Length: 611
Image (tube, rainbow, N blue to C red; front, side, top):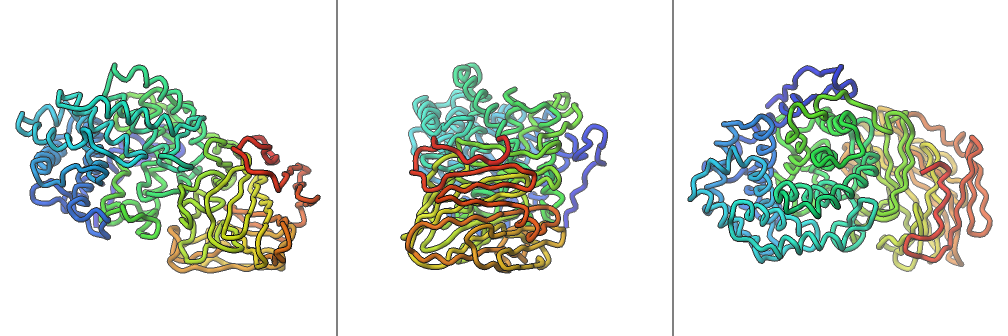
């Protein structure tokens, strides 16, 4: 067992998290030192235990070296050199480039890892690269030269080639400027406004926008220097705008929203906030930046990350393979290194010396529409919960729980079962691509059925207004799944159901119009948040003779929910396909269903509170 030893919390400088720069250094050292037993004799690979990726053992070993080297590079730069790390990684770098690593071939996983090595070499250049002799440097250049004129996948991978060849350019090695320009030009096609990119063609919005689409252009500007001046201002403006939205995607406990693929990268979600500080392109104050990033690091440390071996596992809080992808190998979680980008900021930078400052959710409930990705974020101060209502991101993946749910949150994850239920509506067939109507309003097809959904939010309540059109059958509509070490308590009524975790995290589904039954489905080892899970759901009979309106209240709360009283406090009026909702405090909201699908420019539902 390798125990993580942290410095004493500083409750004056960091009143909310207790974490300081010394804490970040201690975690980085623990992660790096815990890998030492897993290096191969030459030092060129880090072969960790666990399920291998589809790329094979040699590539997985390279991944272990490259991704931890990125962390080592940040750590070396943080203190102006570290002889132990320089020797450890310089030896492996030369052995790997000289022949122990698989060569870079078009669209190979090696390209991903080569980008990490290129960035790491740049950021630790004066302590590592500059100390290699000419022969050793040539080995590395020859290996990285596999980027030149090659082909990558048409998504964030284009940026791996950009930073790889920019490093070659910076050391006077042959490179192709056309490759660099083409990669940077290509991401312009994916810019959708308000600081958001899609990760490749389509509606691909998740954490990759922060830890890839904004991160690598920022790193490239650091590598390219004055040659990046023209693009730098564009990237800074976009990053600043993105962070205005992104600050709302983390709970007050530091937990990022559990949404999208590659969630085992965990702390990498902090990368864009650090990049904002590095490029002086952030709406956050220095104290807010550290409060947000340190909150995320502390969240995972408090939940047992890394494990008792000092390793990052394939999972979220613990090892959980269903939340990974086939490309994820035992060392894939070490993209968490991106989350340590802040170590490049000197010790006297304001991000490290300013007192932690409150974030928006620390002070007030938040409702924020994000039209570019099609999100509506609903967050509540009293429990620190963030809920992402998804009306725009599907990643083109039918049936993928990481993308095809109606909502995600910072304290729940989707169920990985054959029959989709949580935050899902089913009638016939599997859900297909999301088609947007307006903010917080979308529709999708499933087999012969068409289901339209609009979200009206008020405090912790989301009222889901649904129009179902399809064959006769049972409409089944699930809420959030709560999961933990113990079986959640389940309760049901005529048209409501709820499940409550031992810490009082509660999810409830309440039928307000059109539903006729309710129940709770339990799961075992189907959720990243714990072995025992429970999902409340509602049922409605559909006669198949035309469109039918259904209205429900969906609640996820850190404290007690009283479904019967809540149902009585919400007044719903349905006039044709128009739904009006009156909440207990008199707030009204409404939406017109049955609208034609457009490009997102239609009339948005009145959410009941300012966005």
